[in-house]
Amino acid sequence: MIKILRYTEYLYLAVAVISIYKIATLWSAEPKETYIFIFFAVVSIAMFIFRRRYRKRFEQRKKDNQQ
Image 1 (cartoon, helix red, strand yellow):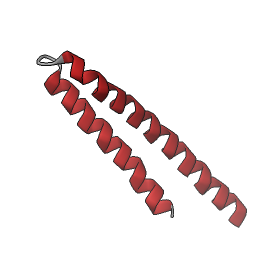
Image 2: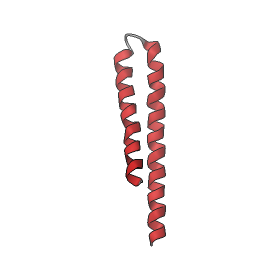
Image 3: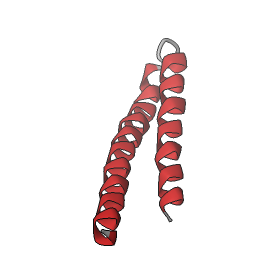
Image 4: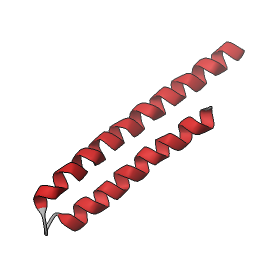
């Protein structure tokens, strides 16, 4: 289960990178369409951070219970 949580973290990071790329390419042509990608990038980065903290807490709690 821990491996699945680790992969979902990087999935959020991939969505953020793709969104940032789309922001960079669309900004000069159509700035109004970039707002949705800005939203996706911010939410994806926030979810990456949240998931990473949650996974590390889960691993630490599991490690403490085994000792």
